[in-house]
Image (spheres, rainbow, N blue to C red):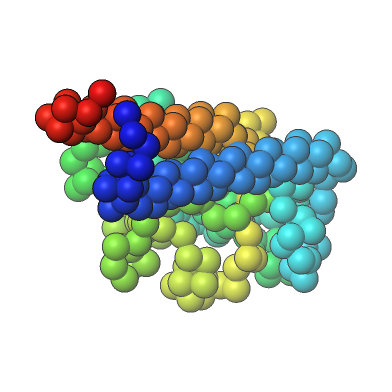
Length: 249
């Protein structure tokens, strides 16, 4: 094969080169995501091992400095219940139960009490009882639960279902605070499994999934390699065909 004939395939080579660059960049992006999650997981584990913070005193705390820390407090649930819709647990459809928890000073946090299974018929509302007498709680501090992409502004709507019962598609603490007429803390408390007034609680560890991103990176790199091999083989075969037709040996 005369390698100067490869020049005839420059358009194909340009397209393939661009595709390979994109695939390789996607691979490195997945590796960077894996590293981010590894660091987040280590931070989560380290902060959970520290002494718990007093929840009632965190009204002016910087969120970054307290994220993932364990915290305890004594107060009461206000009685309001917010259902975070379309949440799954082991393949089952359900909802996460959020409730405002208020301290004597008036400082209020949203507590994620866990997951419950719900009916496929959205008109059938779950029966949730909430004790509003003072009680202790413990949990860890984190950002609001991650939900899917917001396709429109309706994702921020608060749907009134009954007295003190609402349903939402995503958590916006400012919107909830305005609706409840409460100034909410800029974080969520994820209730410990030992705390009362909770439901199914198997919180995913922040950073969980780093191995998945590394696997995706390998796939992107493998696709780039396979594309290069296929392109080289295709060019060689085409050149051999051209040389045979021209009687070139």
